[in-house]
Length: 308
Image 1 (cartoon, rainbow, N blue to C red):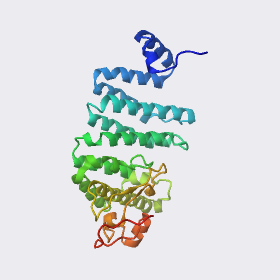
Image 2: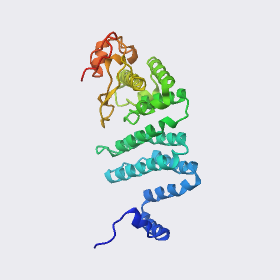
Image 3: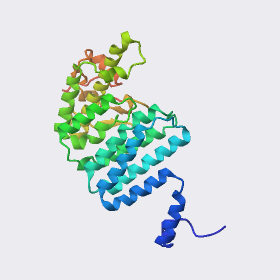
Image 4: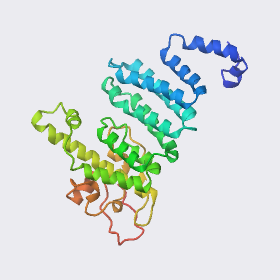
């Protein structure tokens, strides 16, 4: 039947009372939409009120243990996407640090959600990438100390098993600044010598006991090497020069732990490979591991990195 198109202008013409009735009818029996409406109503009480409701929902998601089938997974992804929009529109403009804390907390939900669903469709992964992109938008406004932020990034990235924090250094480089990047590099380098923790071993409890520690150490050290590579990439982007050309990026990869999603020119790495940690004893193998072209001597000005 022909009629007026469904758009914002025509809906506003209905009046507040009619819209309220329609909204109540729409959310009836839909718990996720009811939560979304309640959070929107709480926004009038200030960002802290919205944040309290969001934290309650995050706590419920963390406690949940039931398996998420495809419809439930899709609904959860839609709900979390709505939460991101709520954070960026209602909280971030006036309280960017609070918005960052909430988005960071949402990224920490990834492991628990992935553990009880099959994300072959990428719905949860896409939602977490959206949260990281939102963090990138508010990064220049953050007032966290560089040291604190570096510590948070290191802890989250090392413990991350599903790639939710893969691009944390990229998007938070403006907030880290040179002091934060230097602090993160120092912490990551020192972490190579740290003993393997119980949490590290727990991530590899599927491996036979005799091999568990070596597997956990290799996994941790590979992650630390990737962190140091990302720090070098952020330095290239922050202060490009003839000796440090800009980082050439590919589109973000949806694959887990994709080193190939970014390429850094070889001249941005020291020729002895020390930037990538103590496990990088062989410079040639270090460059090969990350798909990098052979290092260009620093004496060659205005060099261009080879095409991979």
